[in-house]
Length: 175
Image 1 (tube, rainbow, N blue to C red):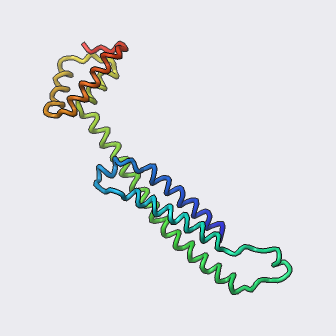
Image 2 (image 1 turned 30 degrees about the vertical axis):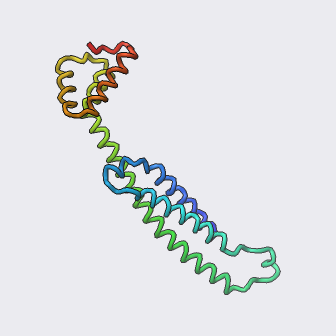
Image 3 (image 1 turned 60 degrees about the vertical axis):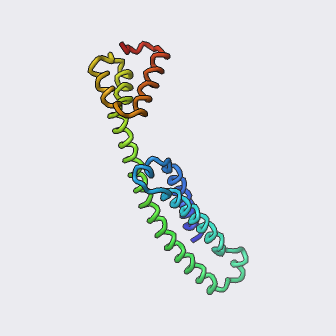
C-alpha cells in the first residue's frame, strides 16, 4: 500500500510539472480559459502531498512481529483505508491526465495558430524571402505592403526585420 501511494505521489508530481511547463499563456489566450493550467498544477501538487502523507501513515512491519504478532484489527483497518485512498487518488490521476491531454491539444493548436499567423503576416513573408536568400522583388514588396497596410504593429515588425537585416549584412539580397 505504501509503495503504491508513493508511486501515485510521484505521478502527481510529474503531472504538476507538466502543467507548469504547458502554462505559457499562449493557449489560454487563444482559448480564453485563464488559470486552468495553474489550478490543475495546484491540484496535482496537493494530491502528491496527500499521497505522501497517506503513505507515511501506513503501518510498517516491525522486527517485534517475529516474536509477537500484532493485533490484526488495526492492520486490516489500515489496509482498508489505504485501498480507499488509492482508489480516490486514481480517480484524481485519471482526471488530471485528461486535463493534461486537453492542455497539450491546446498548446498544439496555439502553436499551429501562431505559425499560421506568422506565415500569413508581412513580417513572415519577408523573413521567408530573406531566409531563402531570395530577391525581394516587386511582387514580394507589393504583397508585404498589402499584408501590413493599416496595421502599425505589422509595419513596425517589417521595418525592424529589414533594418536588422541591412545592419547585419550577411549577403542577403534585399535589392
